[in-house]
Length: 474
Image 1: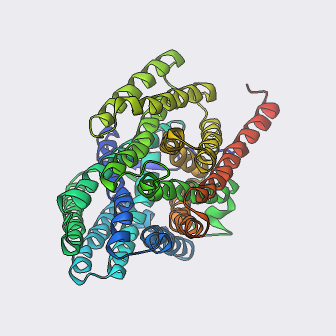
Image 2: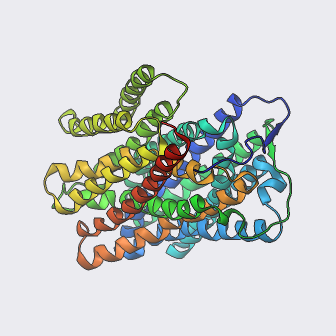
């Protein structure tokens, strides 16, 4: 059984409540979710603009998510040999530095658009990814600390739900800007991305100013001399890094290929401006599942109320999504059936994050395999439905991995963010396979990724069973 050695290790300074900081952070999660999902719009756009292969187009994700690995590696080295940077500058300072770096990355899109070089676009994405690395390290751990440890997964699911709101809106708004409003000549198409990212950069600067003048609670740990492996000495963290690697890799790869998959004549053969609606629903499914997960994994509410609140929330969030996408009612029925399945698995799994993680991963394995081998309209909807079951994976893996790390929480968070490297490598690997054997067959790559995630969740189920036998628990 994994035990938390000292639950009172972190202490908040000041009398600031947690509700307002949570509201600020959920807004931040929305912003970086929106900009991250713009990569899925950029890929088909830049692929056509620069006449790229699938492999070359996936360098968008390689540059962006590769920055997570580089930034997290630097963070780990500094924290191991010197001191934890977040403990030195505070979680608020980490967020401010992350926002500023992200803004610089966005502003690099202007010279990229002016020069018209693919490599400069990739540089801007790399710097943007470095900024998001700092945001991930700071904000995810911050949300986990803003309350009791047993509610950490529920809080992080709520914050991630607003992240998914951003990823849902991005394909619609971003797709409109790139594929419709500025569609035309090569010069006009390049201009679309430059203008869009300059606006994003300005928003990051404005949000940084807002946070700077906002009083937020501080969390500090006692400085100690580093011994041994530090956070890496915890087995749940080591396994969790790989789980994050494969989960993010699969999620990003599917989103990256969604528009190209739907554009394939053997699937729907529709244009990009139509395909963006299905991409929005893929990310919207994650939002639906995360809002549902934030309710279901809150053990303080009795079961009947949780079920009622969860169903009502799922319906309301779906209604919101349906108002911004352009998909007929006759088609959307398929998605509603998968929503029902999502709800049933939540109930069967109970309020145990490891069990939910395991069952969701197993479901995604089946869905992705059917996408690779099946046919007809169900092939499309099985791929879109993967988003519903991706929903709570990040937050559940993250909270299971950092549980009990105490003074190593910041360092452990940086190592988990390093696992986002999967978002850089898995799409490139799938892109290479798509060029070699075909796009549909390449989806066996995400299926293998979800296999490890299922193993990670099952690992905690086995530990829980052993704990119950030893302690006589139920």
